[in-house]
Image 1 (spheres, helix red, strand yellow):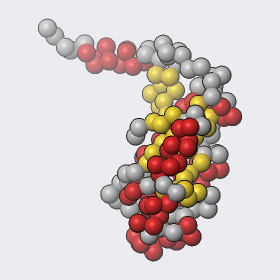
Image 2 (tube, one colour):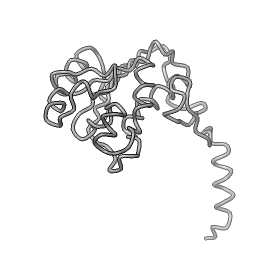
Image 3 (cartoon, helix red, strand yellow):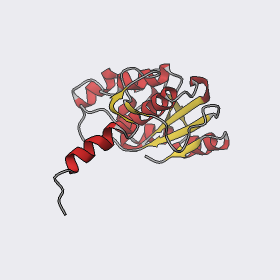
Image 4 (spheres, helix red, strand yellow):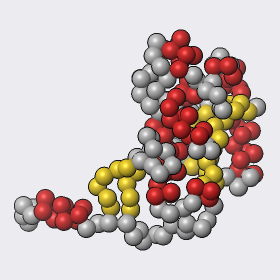
Length: 179
């Protein structure tokens, strides 16, 4: 069997698959959360539905200069659904941050004091807060990892624990999305 036509087939498939080849950000989070536009998906998005999600973020990149892609998932969620016609008012997003991801929600000053550089996540966190995302920090991680409220980006809320916040949000109809 010959495969010399495979590159041509692949190009044809990509061109007509209904998937945009370029990622774009926005319309909710302009500088973060790039997504592909999916034209005419088989499983249709119900744009009248309310989407209440909670992302539990525990991991962080090894590099102190790299953005946490797991935090950026919230921006991607907002952008892809808004691009697909879901009104922003129907998108309810919460981030629960704990464990080693604790550092990612600190101010540039607190981050720089510990790691020698500005927090690469501060702009993302601010954009998420500005878009109405609830960013909740585990109080147990705050104490065990020594990140007091004064070190957090303004607007980040401290809860009793990540477990408590997860249960309460799920009781309010938020659906956990595993990262």
